[in-house]
Length: 117
Figure 1 (cartoon, rainbow, N blue to C red):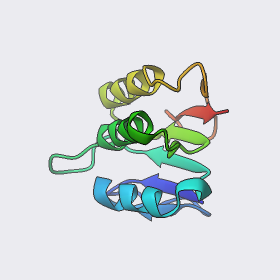
Figure 2 (figure 1 turned 90 degrees about the vertical axis):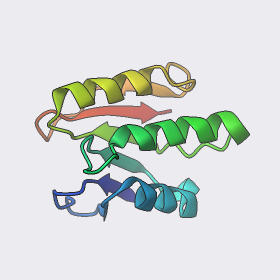
Figure 3 (figure 1 turned 60 degrees about the vertical axis):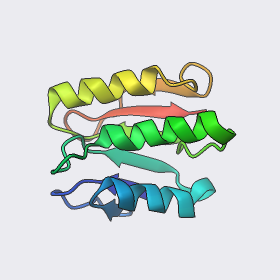
Figure 4 (figure 1 turned 30 degrees about the vertical axis):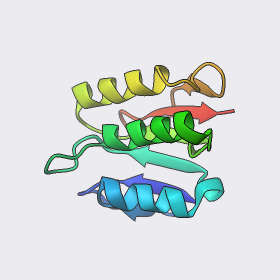
C-alpha cells in the first residue's frame, strides 16, 4: 500500500490519497505492516502540515518500538522551506542512519525519498 498525503493534488496511480493528518495516521494505524511508501505534502491547510505525520511516526517508534515507518518516505511539497523542515525531521529520527537511509528519488520535481532498511 502507498499513501499520498495531499489536500489538493490527486494521487498518482496505485497510491491511496489522504487529505489530512488524521486520515493519514488512521490509515497507518490500520495497515501498520502493509504500508510500503508514504509521500507527504507540507502545506495542508488550516493548522496542519506533513510535519505532524513525521512527528507521530517518530513518537510511535519511541513509545512502543512499533515500526510504523513505511519502507519509503517521500516528500512532494512545493514549499522549499517546509520540505527542508521535513527532511531535517527525517534525518534526525532515531531510525535515520540505522534503518532509514537518505536517497534522492527521481520522477517528480522536488521529490526527496528516504528508504527504511
